[in-house]
Image (tube, rainbow, N blue to C red):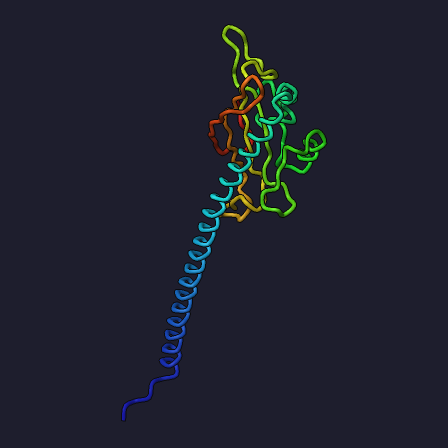
Length: 211
């Protein structure tokens, strides 16, 4: 007969087995956590990609509305240009306190002057785009730029996507992407006020944009 293993040997064997089980469980948990993190990042990436396209469409749709609105209101261009703190979100030396349509207080201040500068694109009752206008550099040198007055029947119009449903979220925090997307173009008008062409362009930024 073979000798029976001692109780110490049995405890050692059980301890080694337990340690092996713990290691296997730890590895499995790590693999599960890795798979879940990967799946979550892929989902976030897919949602971000989808909403990036939505945000682009949001801003471009707003640009069409801006062209139509400011084109119809050609006689008021100088009135708009003389109030950049309402009609222009881009900071500059001549517009040190630009409109801020991305905050509730900023939207309220703008709407108190002209609520037509906002549009709801998806019918949820919330503002999605802010329409704006600023002058192009239309003075001949050595005359300095006069941003508050139009001299050549050309202005820059644009739209800023401010939607909380059409913009992507950051993958690291799932918070709304702080960067804003603006699309703008040059709006030209004939002497009779008829809009006859516009050229589009765009870019992203945190809102601290300059001429």
